[in-house]
Length: 219
Image (cartoon, rainbow, N blue to C red; front, side):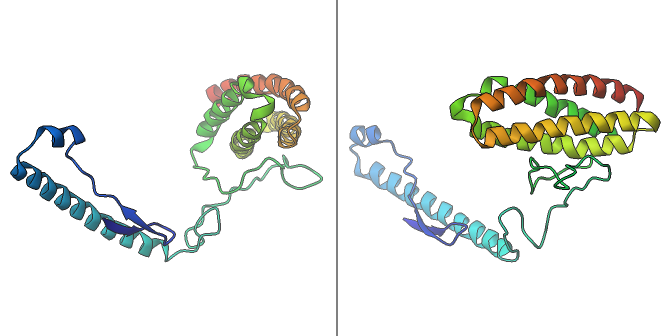
């Protein structure tokens, strides 16, 4: 058997892959055939073992060049998205639902409009997931989708002219205040409070989707 090392330096064993089926050994009585099968198995195991050692050695060497802080490698950090409009919580200066360590691809204003619609649709499709034993998943899903909506909304607001900018900002603040209540309720695993907050969320998300549909045609 061929030893290999995993990413954390723990020694493991690669079990040789035997290409000869157990039933085949019963039916084949020829010693030459058995010996040939054994040689093929040994060669395959040796080849796989060598390839694994080369790959893991190179991969571990590359990883050792960076320091892992739990979210990304410090030598190659992901860009941290920021907001330029007044859509954060006035008391905290941020939003409780924001999930750190996410890659936010810059897909332009129209792309952000479409991503808001997609994320809103995904949250609307989450209704059947809300139950007492699944609130942990609800909490994680709300954080993921609402984080994308938050930063995309900021880009869309910045690209909106005149009076529409304030209207859109008010819509965003109302939605994000609701997201914070929904995130807190699901994190505390309060089913009744989560359902109540989610009913309000559904109404707001439908309004947001309708608004984004109009904006996509005008931007």
